[in-house]
Amino acid sequence: MGSFGILRRASQSQRSNTKQLPSLFFSLLFSRSISQLSSQSQWPSFGIAFDIDGVVLREDTPIGGSPQALRRLYDDSGGGFRESKRAFQLSELLGVNILSSQVLQGHSPFKQLVDRYENEFIVAVGKGEPAAVMFEYGFKNVLSIDEYASFFEDIDPLAKYKKWTSKLAANQSSTFNKITQTKSLYSQRVQAAFVVSDSVDWSRDIQVLCDILRTGGLPGREIGNQPPLYFAHDDLKYQATFPSERFGMGAFRIALESIFNRIHPNALEYTSFGKPNSFVFRNAETVLKQLLSSLDHKLHVDHAIDESHFKTVYMVGDNPTVDIKGARQAGHPWFSILTRTGVFKGKENDADFPADLVVDTVEEVVDYILRKERIS
Image (cartoon, rainbow, N blue to C red; front, side, top):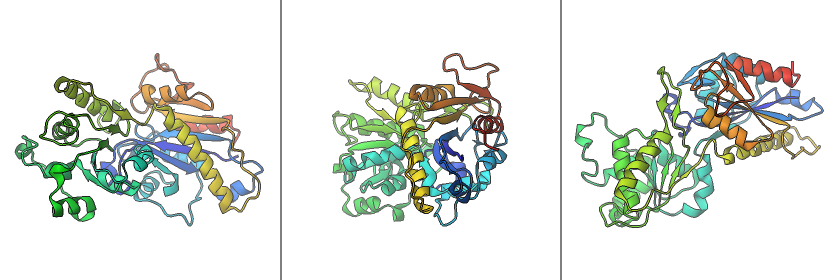
């Protein structure tokens, strides 16, 4: 039998530079070659879910022997498939061929909201190109918070003290051009705000989001009903290159919520996606089955794929409160594996959210799984 893996980390546009990407990503990796799979009597009955940042990569540097480990699960099965830039970057870093069809990002669940907000005016927050991400998902009337804030003079009182500048991709934003031509922004109510990736400018983004959320979507106006607010994930911290963990989107959410609740009579309402949300784990299983179906079609195989649950899906992560907690809540068929390469560095298992297995590196993970699944 072959196997599949899922990589999760990075909530950012696939077109962004690797070093700009945060650490929430889902990716489905073919393991073994298609020709090898076609010669087997059974299709893969298990999956592997890797948390990338802190397990497979630290920033843009592979750790824990991950390239060698993943190559043992991988063979070159990517001929004829178009890859996104992010899939290409991961392929280059890890030395395996990752397909664009195998990549699910932390903000992928936002796609489910297209029917609701397709033509509504929305604002997207985060590094990289958050508005471009949402536009690609099908949202037709979206501005990045950089673009949105640029229309309001003095909305950020600290702007003149900031040494960096925000480059507005006006030539890539049809919404920006349309609003610039009609000058109708001040009367357009923001119907929802989406935090797509990590905020670069917390002070500006918290200020502007509070302006939007407390006025019913019309900054500078009277207090109104709060528009919906969505976060791609709620990770408090993650392991980057710096020795100590760095604050993630969950920390930004806490800061925004604390301030909003002090200035508004009603508490902040929001929806967070991402681990440990059980949706993430159910969606991972669904995509695995879809990839099996695509293999079936590519190989012109006539037998029906077993649509039942996988016997085992291994969740490999470094954060007990996110990765392991989520796998435990998801239940069967998830099997949790905790590594000491990132947030978790304890000698024993985590006390609050103990994993089914604790190891030092990804190489040990792969050794364990291949032995357990009896794959040479």
